[in-house]
Image (cartoon, rainbow, N blue to C red; front, side, top):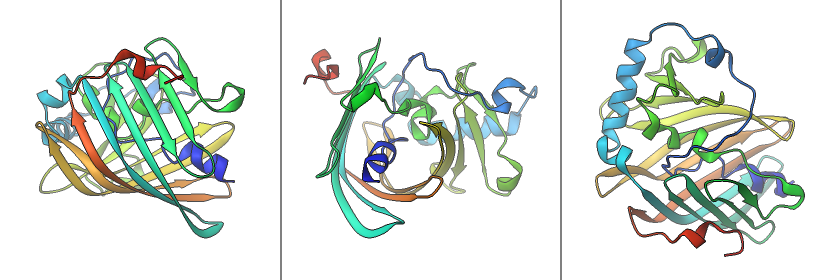
Length: 248
């Protein structure tokens, strides 16, 4: 059971990346049949972009985040401690999770995705769900629409990637920063819904990044809760290309 949890709880990582990976997934209805205009939602998305760094966020070349995460599951009261690091350089990324049960490493070198998991299994692209979508605001292929009817009372917008992954963002009334988001996707034949509540932000070189947040994953018969806390956040630091090799 932990193997599945270890695979999914890191999806939606707070890393802010610009990636052009070619992936295949089912397209949402909104991505296939787009209404013509969503001026109010696009305006909110632009406010969110500015609240998190605006031009500095869009121009960011590298991002390195490391810290700790505590994981619990609905089937057990036991807390599982782990550490994580994410490294992004333009289109390339590296994810590494260390825990006593199922260590995980995945890299994308700009051409192919490699994972330490057996059977060639890989995580969905973390830059297509959640907070990493924000730097893509304003790009024509990343579509801004309204929230679904059940969340219409919330202040926010839906953002859908070219491949059909979508995230519903909710904005703070005063700061316009992202205070939470929801998303859903299919992984390995399972439908998964995830929700994030952000508790604390950190400004690094003009870019505002979530520092502490709680994420919940609901699967068919299991819920996973993860409390993330970033200890080090580096923006535009030097990153060597060999970091994105699975052997390192």
